[in-house]
Image 1 (cartoon, rainbow, N blue to C red):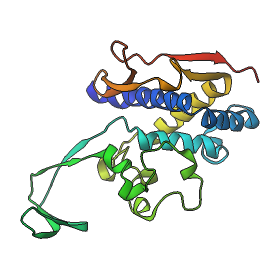
Image 2 (image 1 turned 60 degrees about the vertical axis):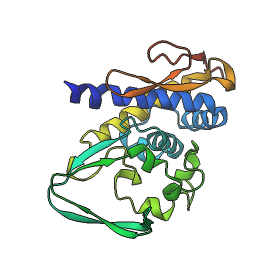
Image 3 (image 1 turned 30 degrees about the horizontal axis):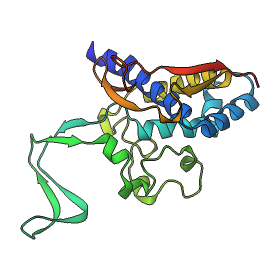
Image 4 (image 1 turned 60 degrees about the horizontal axis):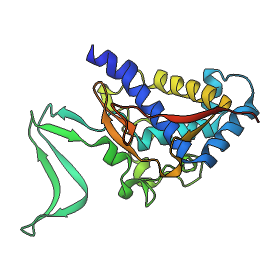
Length: 226
């Protein structure tokens, strides 16, 4: 049941909440996305989602980068191994370490959100919500391109234990965003100074407006009149 709730409901709803909050925080991004959706017209098919709506794709994947619903993950080493470091680390004693030995059975933590937002990997603006990076010729730095997971993100993890539903989740995410943003305008409830914090959802942390109970994230919503 935990797997069904996390994978089939909570992770997707958390990501959609973050997307609406970011669009409300960034009216110019919201407007740009709306114009692309209105210019397209009809509801996009799956193939059209992938190839005909580049800014929608950029907004979705920037949300998945900045706000992965699963922020940390653990794996257990199946065998002894040595992990090379991309850059040497100097310990307190002055020893230079170039690799880490991992024994079979060792539990390894994977800080997904830290890697997705690392300035060493994604550049100086790594913590900024900027969908344009997905459209620019050099928007994805070389170090990020070296991450071989889905779209260079660890949001869906990778390898044999990668999320089986990632393609369905992205299609669902794009479908909901295309319907909502085309017809409605989203604004922060208390204006630009509205504060957002993390609360505890059913199983995962999720955003809420500061001062609200539980995980409420109320927005001001009005129908787009053109």
